[in-house]
Amino acid sequence: MPSMMHAPPPFSWHHLNLWHLNWWPCLLLVVGQVLYFGLARREVWPKVRYACWTGGLVVTFLATQSVIGFYDMAMFSDHMIQHLLLIMVAAPLLAYAAPLDLVRHRGPGWLRRFLDSAPATALLSPLAAFIIYAAIIPATHLTSFFNVMMNNEWVHHSEQILFLLVGYLFFRQAFAIEEDCSLNPGLRLMYVMVAVPVDTITGLALNMTNFNPFPSYNVMGSRSVIMDSIHLGGSIMWIGGDALMLLACIPVATYWVREETRRTKILDAQLDAQGL
Image (cartoon, rainbow, N blue to C red; front, side, top):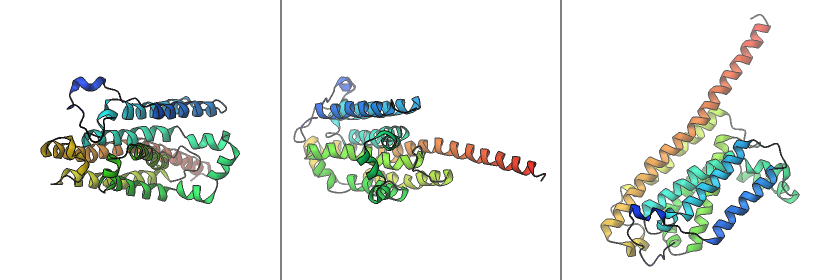
């Protein structure tokens, strides 16, 4: 990652081969892959979940270690692309891999006990997941936190991990793959759709601003270039975020239709058996 005090070279398509490789994020990704596969080998585990976990980590790697990670501090629009990749692409894939089910089945006893505790149960509830998502998105993009993140590399890395966790907590409820997720399919669809305005409002606020809300960007170029990047980033959050959120509605709606069809067939069979 380039220094926050010095602008990197202006982006061009010739820079797509730039990489921002940092040993500790790469180590975390490798450890995450090894731990998941180590636990999953002890279970009869669907191959699609292996693929989703690996896909989520690959997307995380590309979002943080590729050219996207190189320019994420210099271009707000690039930062927003990274944000969407983490919270709306990588996190849903990780949620579909159902890692907490693996922990509950094969994890260490102390961790299983923690997951069954009252604090963990509250944190993993649909209401908590929605509130956290609705609070974190504007808080990390419309407040002074963003400037703190711009001037502290560890805060920036923590924000990336936070996006993964927030996205995971939210989408695990939407997909309801894990055993403790019990929202009705219809409620799950509403759950996702009610969250759409969070990104819309945040993106529109950035897209329509007439001033630079992030003074730390002032060293990155002229005011017009900075404002164009902020406006573009707002549009990416607004349009891209809404599109990805609506895309997530497709499997939820499909499951709902299938579930209602299955229940209708069962009810029809029961009525036929009763001669009604």
